[in-house]
Length: 167
Image (cartoon, rainbow, N blue to C red; front, side, top):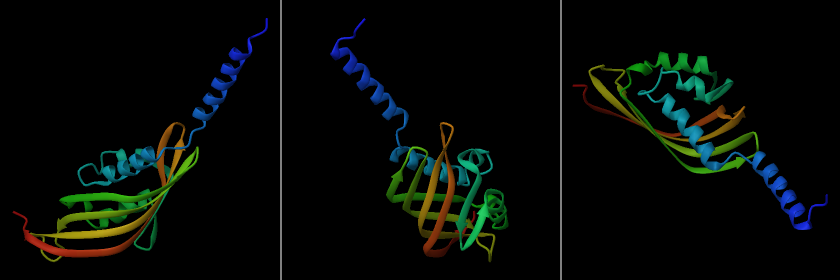
C-alpha cells in the first residue's frame, strides 16, 4: 500500500518535529529557576531542610571568597560564620546572560544580596551587610532534573552597617 505524498510529508514533518523537541536546549527560564532554587534553599529560612542537597550535583563546587568549596566544605564554612543564627538573607539576581545546550546551561549574572545577622562585636546588636557579586554558574541535566554543578562568585562591593538592638 502506498501512502499519498501529503501523508508521507506529514509523517516526516512530525518525526523531525519530535526529534527537535526531544533534543531541545535547556530554556533560559529553567536555568534561572534552577539558580533561584539554589538561593532559596540557601536562605536562612530554608537552610538545613534538605533542599540544598537536592538542587546541586554530587560533585558540586563553589568558588567563594577566593576559595574552592565542595558542598560539605561550604556548609562547614557557613557553620563557622554561625549562619543558622542569621536573621535574614535575600538575593536578587539580574542582568542574566545565558548560553544553553541540550544537557547544560551556563549563566552569568549580577547578584545583589542583603544579610542581617548578629554583630560580631556585640551579639545584642544586629549588622546589615549589602553585597553585589558578579557570578557565573553551570546548570546540568541529571536525568530529567536540572541541578547546579558549579558556581563562581566574585564580590564587587560590600557595605556593612550596625542596626539597633536585637529586641
